[in-house]
Amino acid sequence: MLEKMKLRQGYLLSAAVLSICGHVIYLSVPLYMMIVYDKVLYSFSRSTLYALGLGLLLALLALVLIGFLEKRVLTLAGARFATDTEAFVIDSIARDTAGLSPAGYTRGLTDLETVRSAAAQGWFSCFSICLGR
Image (tube, rainbow, N blue to C red; front, side):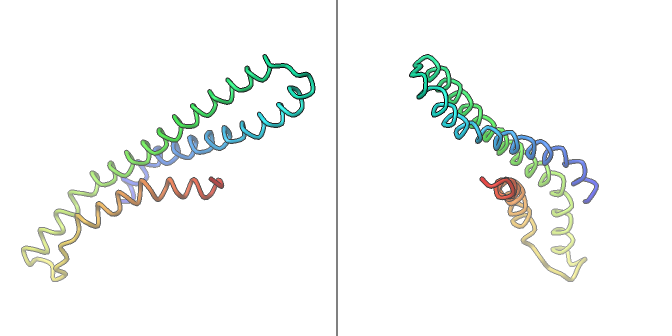
């Protein structure tokens, strides 16, 4: 199982890079305000204000796209993890049902779905909390 998780580290690395890029884009709003106060209000330049506003709009649209891609990557990582471990879980449930194992636990697929969901949402929340979103 650990080998399969190591193969999926690329997903988490991609999500971490996307999260960092998103947080860098978050800095565009305070930077916009500082430039407006420093340059635009001082020189009364509307063209500078329009150019800065358009740049901020594009940065925020990129932020939406990055957020979507980050959630998509983490959802894909959770789905791949569930696919990789599904055969093991089903085999364990079949052995329990056949009486080969005294445990008798039959909620394996439900637990697998919970892990898949937690992998997608939990890592996204972790990246967001760690970087202060």
